[in-house]
Length: 584
Image (tube, rainbow, N blue to C red; front, top):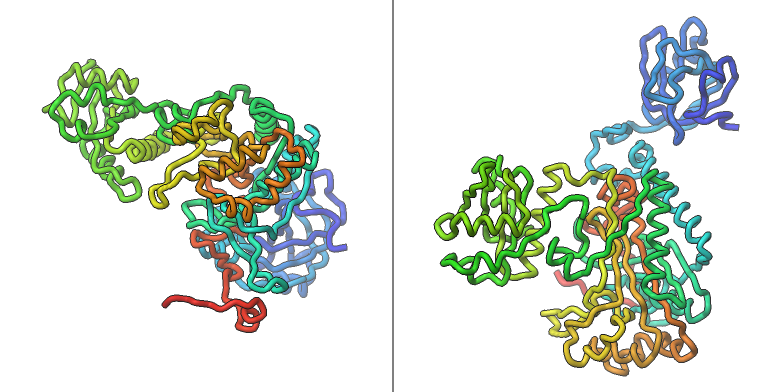
């Protein structure tokens, strides 16, 4: 037996007990006549004491050789600690060691195994097995486990059945590039890793499973933006004989359950917002509604004067920054420089100060009088003491830029409290979106999303106006889940493939199995998938997902710990009938 107790377990009630502990050496404090060692495992830290009056000389010498992260086993007596430590659970006791066994030596770690470490992210990723010993990462992984268990509990109690679907599937166009896997036994043919289990969960509904879920890995070979991973985990769900309202109710319930059981927070309101309104008021389809700063569209009150920049703009739009009138000219110039950065891409910014006496002072006073500026303030809900910031240009671009400014200012003003949770349903997305590069429509979600009832006919006359029977669940400015009512009949699915530019032969080659299944009595069905990594991070009060993933990839999609991806040797390539054609 390596241990009778763990390192976070012993209390004053154990004094005089003989115990055995095992773990890692966190720290050694050697005073010569007395040595203290902090022994750590997953559960906590227990202080060990070696005392030259009570400890044999040979053991004192052995203890003096201990280094950080040595793996040791000790036997000893629990005694009352002279100088108690209220910051740890075991702070009232220590172990007077009677036997010390070194189970494994350790090199000096490349960074300190402490809550606040001196290791940079890339270094910690290379030695991730050491990083996991740190409390922030360890606790994040334990937190993820707790969330996952609560998800399983809730869905199982709602009669969902957990079903595994394959990882080696067929490559199908679902919006991102597939990771492909060559098949040795089928020369010249490839599997793909699933971007999601989309078609399989629909087939499970055809198979009569009624309610399915799976906590599943998904894979997308995308250019990685900030805080994205090439492999990620979904809570994937599907239900048969349901309408949109049934699905929203179930997953509002799941979100409430997680917030209550994991965070001790009661959330009742799940407001709903149309996609068009989200874009108009917040500039994106996942607005953070913990704070205001809604957009005010100013075309009608700015394009009547001789200011060419506004007159030629497709959209003139502004926000009111609370208390922003206190900013100096230098502060505002820095803000203008911020929106002109390449990451944001604005050409400039117009502003108007809302003075405490009800007057206004703007950077375009030459063109706009006090009455004009008062209308700007009214439309942006600006109060005395605020600063109105205005951008202009092409509608989509300007909304994206102003959305970034809104989020940046909320961060600076401390308006994004991670302990406050504000869920939101965003509804009625466009079914299709136009791609300038391919000059054709693409499915905004995926090709199996049903149009809103009564809008199917619009596909032939005005496809860009067709709304999808789709919905996203947003939490604190992050999309944590999304789904739709699916198409469940072959005729409608064939029509959708037509509008997405598939020939009949292409549709049959890619999705013939699903179309065939629809001819054998497919029920109405729909579902939703949560992004588990993102959900766990937000519930944990963070916005970065990496610390909630045991072995994440870096921004280049590399695992620097195991050095993957990596070349394979020529024998393997030959066995797989592959030949590399790498351009220098």
